[in-house]
Length: 381
Image (cartoon, rainbow, N blue to C red; front, side, top):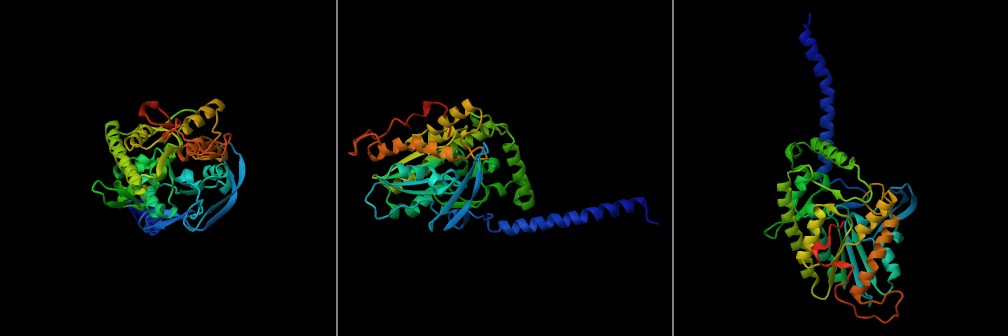
């Protein structure tokens, strides 16, 4: 007769065996997918140098619903270069290159309703190019500038930045804040000037050995962050649960790294091209560090967008300018961004305002809408 202990052991083994097989199957599947370092999807493809880039010749159509359940039809396209907008390289007009991350790639936003498309409509005196890719940090953006600057020959480069760029620009900070990072083979600028590709969110504890554990860990951490009760009109914070002394040291190092990358972009563009930055919303303490990086690199930073959105959303009590993830911009958000960028861009190119005569007039080299002092206050990205 089989003893009670053997029956229990047999039952446990019987139950665990299929679970183990299932877990191994998931592990093998994830390893197969991540053997390419990042799971591909319709909007981007792998790139050995940059990690990933927008998918060339993409065309997507559908309906999108924003944070306040407004539904809109969209057609999103990316050209052979992966750009959302490509200008005429033979033009004699002033040239503006817009470069950014997911806010500029603008998933599910119609080609005609992105902030740069609206700017191009309002500023026919200038020619526009626009490139954005989800998850990009400043170093990846600098690589795109290096690839296309000689062909586009921009007079102004408008770089859209996010507070999480500080995270994306430093390997150690991205590994410490996986909820703010983008899993993928991100290139990092090392202190000795070399480039190192690193999979930040997959090199932590058991995540380095088990893709299944890493995937579950990432999902849990993002669920915790997404479940926080963000209140319209209030600043968002990040890393409050981390060791503040260690976090502050990493942010300081990331600030220096970001300023170094911005300076490298300035050098690449040369003295005849203006580099102007703007950022979307403030997430402290990253937002303040981003402002400091721009100040250190002597890059004019437009800071009016975040405060304008947050003030209006605080007054309304809901996320009027956001997509369903409560971060990115819906159609109204893109329109407001265009409203706030048009005057600084006209000033940078010395173009007349719409209500002025067509003759361009000289303006101060740094427009008032662009902050020059890091003490301007706690302002969102």
